[in-house]
Image 1: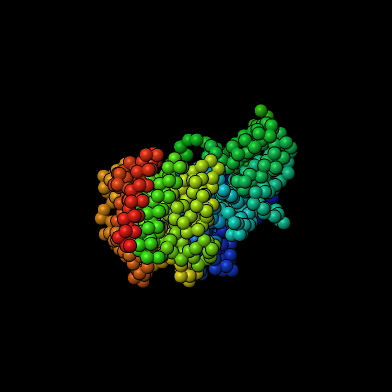
Image 2: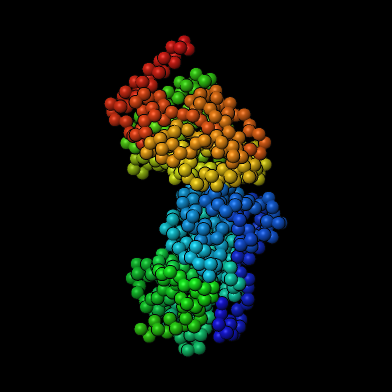
Length: 326
Length: 278
């Protein structure tokens, strides 16, 4: 995932090596389910990819297998939620948010049941398996559906907090996780609140507004830029909807440039959400969206694709310098 | 409630349904008339529900998968006292909560439906919840013929028997017509009894306008571990001569003249029924 220079920077910053957010999710869910028999996981032959095999073994009555049938998975999750269960429907985001989009829209969001949908191995986590397995559309389509809180945690700490938030939410929630081992970027003592972004680093020249597995790269880029005398703010915009507009506007007002970073197609993603927020408030800082362009995605592992599209310490630092010089 | 009482009620509710659709200027007339007897039997003889217990965790659940026949559902719910009859005059009106498909905003409606192929998977979730809780409530959904072309039904059909959901009932309003015409011409779905049996369901075929048959099929428990599929043979547009088995009445809205003629026919049928039993 990281170049040797980025690894060295991570070590210099003292970023602790964590596990995959998916693993943190599964472990947290199991803890919650052990304490509350109403917590139920629903899987579509996805307990292995969802890291839920230990959960399934420990709590066989609280995991429901539906087979490879994502529409059914979402309908069942909605029905469980309507009858008092804290149901987590867990399936690869590429299938969950495309094949069963209508069930998400109607059975969960329109019916307003407190179901949790968990898009696993999201973005380009599946890397070289190709576009069938990528979910670079999911946030765009979900953002356009009313009544859904969308959370994309940056690290294990945010993941654990997001799962706990979702378990007690009274309205629909979508959680999006990748499967790469993550470095922990959340500062000690930071509190997680859905809808409120976390500022990981203050800075006034440029602000990186990122989410999910891209956040750590922004964090490393900010440190690299600091060595060159450029002050960069880093924000984890973990909640895509509702967006923390106050934090976005503060970044727009207080920085000369704003760069959004996302593991998503640029169309309809968090970059466009930030851009519209800034423009409607009359703010027009220098602005760049980093993510996946509207093109046939090149083949490669997630790390290859991140580097290819500039989601890396070096790539993001170069983008910031070019933007500030423009 | 006797069969005769139900028959009289159904005639009255058919008239109410037609007036509602005429006033709303929109609605699904043919399917509403074909499923009205099923709904009456459900709400008067089968479902353990009442306006006083809409939030009771142990209540039976009914989800109308063929959501487009919402006018029939609203009519039956109003008659059962879930909300005032006058509310029916607002269906589909500007800012009315009575949307043209089922919505949980309305007392007694369990889930928002309207897109086809959604009811059965939702009901699987509800039936699973009952099993997990060791609760005895049953879960019912009403499907339409054309709807069975949606693949999600068959995902659910497979999963229901896999999970041995003998507290789940799928009802088919089998009037053999859909918006374009005969289902056998649009997308043939027969033999339905064999298909559902092959998916592991207990299948019962009944006359969907016969209260005794419907009651027996819906109240006799299926074999342990088997979900129940009730194939209710119905007539689209049932009760109004010029609407029966005519596809254009799928969502045809009766004009003043047509409404008057339909009401006359239904009133005459009621008079005849009273005379026979007098």
